Amino acid sequence: MNSRIGIKVTKLEAEVVEPIALQWRGKEMDAGPITVGLDEFWSQTANQGMLDYGRSRARVEFHVRLSFPELVSTLETLGVDEGLTRPLRAVIRSEGEILDDHSLVLGGSCDLGPHVLFPAEETRASVLHGV
Image (cartoon, rainbow, N blue to C red; front, side, top):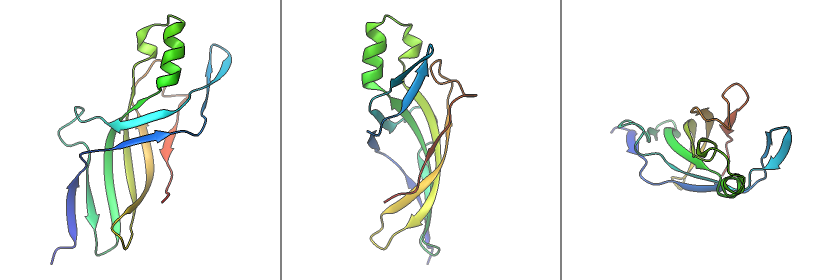
């Protein structure tokens, strides 16, 4: 019996409500909530993973779009370039435990795509393990 199962993630909706402070033009501002959803058009091999029930381990790669609705609204009222308000694309490479109820406890690295407001040399992101 094969204890490894390939999976394709077809839906992901999340919201980060914890405050994240941003520095912009010398001023600190609250980014407001961040919405996370799958970026299904990035790659044909995106949003896939492997469940290894023999080891109770999971590995999943998510291609996501991060949106900042409140921040975008504020920036639009300031008349900024639309490049600042577009969603941020990222790839989350996560690993973790498969629990007895088949839920997953995942965490891992997050590689951010290019974005004017979030320069790669100044921006870091990760997903912490949690239940």
